[in-house]
Each structure stands twice: as C-alpha cells, then as structure tokens.
Amino acid sequence: MTLKSTRNVIGNKLRIVRGTRKMNKSKFIANRKEKMRRKKGKRVE
Image 1: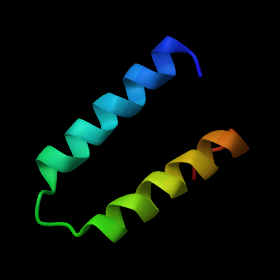
Image 2: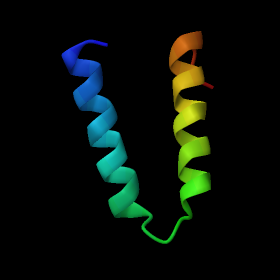
Image 3: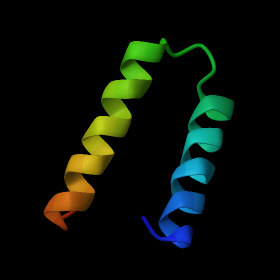
C-alpha cells in the first residue's frame, strides 16, 4: 500500500467514525469491505 492510500483510508475511517458514531461496528466493517471491493474493481457506481 502506498503512503497516500494509507493516509486516505485512515482519513476515511476518522470521518466515518466521527460522522456516524451511533452506527454499529458490523455495518462499518461491511462499509469498508465494500469500499475495498470498489477500489479493486476500479469502478464507482
């Protein structure tokens, strides 16, 4: 992983946690998995 993508993931994590603190963790993990899948597929819907 490059430094930039690592920083981006950390920033996304912070933003998600800050914005939706009430959201349960399982939903958050699923969200992150979905993001990774989209990144690997190189397509945004």
